[in-house]
Length: 156
Image 1 (tube, rainbow, N blue to C red):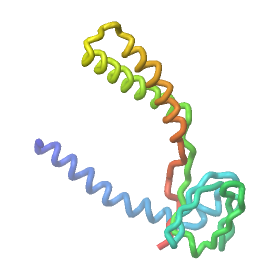
Image 2: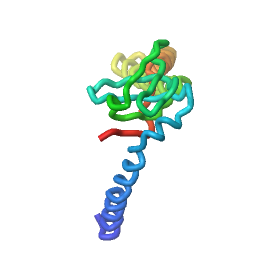
Image 3: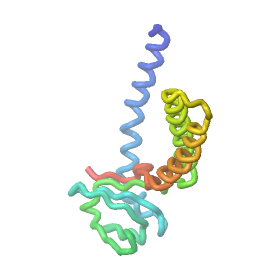
C-alpha cells in the first residue's frame, strides 16, 4: 500500500470514529419515534431480545402501539431497546436478480453437462435457460423481506 493510500485510509477511519458517536447521539431521542406517522413500517427490538416488525398505529410518551400481522401490539417505552425504520424489499427487483442468477447457473450447468457427455446438440444449455431463469425468479421473489433501515431510537 502506498503512503498516500495509507493516509487516506487513516483519515477515513478517524472521520468515522468522530462521526459515529454523533449519529448515535441523535438516535437517543424518543421524540423521533413520537413523530412517526401512522402506518410507518418499523422494526422494534425489545430489551428482552425479541424483534417485532409491524406498522405504527400510535406513539405516546410512555408506549408505542403498532399492528403486527393484523393484531394490535403495545410496548412500553421502558421495554424498547431500538427502533428502526424499515421498508419492504422490491419483489420485482429480487425476482429479476434471481432470474439472472438462475439463468447463469442453468446455462453453466447445461454447458458443463453437454461437455462431459460429449453430446453437442446445444439442448442442455437451452434446458438450463428454461429451468434456471424461472426457478431463480421464483426463489428471488419468495425471499423478499423487510430490511432494517435507519436506526431512529435506542435506549441505553
